[in-house]
Image (tube, rainbow, N blue to C red):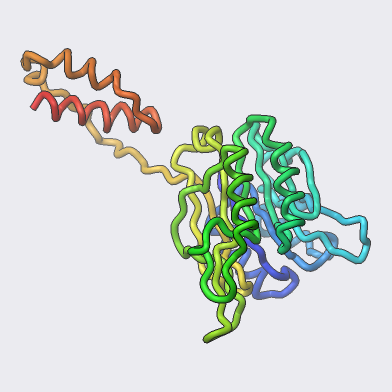
Length: 286
């Protein structure tokens, strides 16, 4: 499962569409989350989505106010089954696809309003399915995630941490830029922050071992796009299985192997078998 999230800050211009096209063509995601498109879904040419092999049907979060454009779009690859809408509000869209939950977020800038988001998402968590949450949370986990301007409030950070802890969520391993947002000011007025991220539960990380995301450069928007997916290393076709008979001649061979298998080790089953177990046994025998 590959995903992209980008607070695009307007999708109607050619530069933003070209940037989005390059990201999708390079990463080939099944799910794409867009925040702040700043146009109505009907204003986006269907030919643009079709050129990217994305479904011409997609979800948005309409408002009761007809003058307000949806601030979230959820797109999907035309080769997968249409996701099932689970819930949406003015701060998130949550869908189910292939028995996993995916939530895209564009959180409110006021922490009192974000508390409604934390409450809504905590209700969704009761399903206990693999769950990925990606988006612009407009919140920090620590003071170190912001440079310039006033420090984030303790109340806001505590709310965010409590939401994650209460729902047993963790940040997805990531690489690339650490700070995802820039206020487009310079010198003493410059502010950078980590507002965009991906979170997941244990079931997600177990279902998609090695899943991580990369924060790429800010172009056309004040937010960096996030690109997530499983990173797998292909096994060489000519890699032989190795076992040295001399290991069996060691007087403690069986005891060492049995002790190694009793050790609780977390990780993918192949990792446990081929690296930790075997390495531990060999070192003890040698």
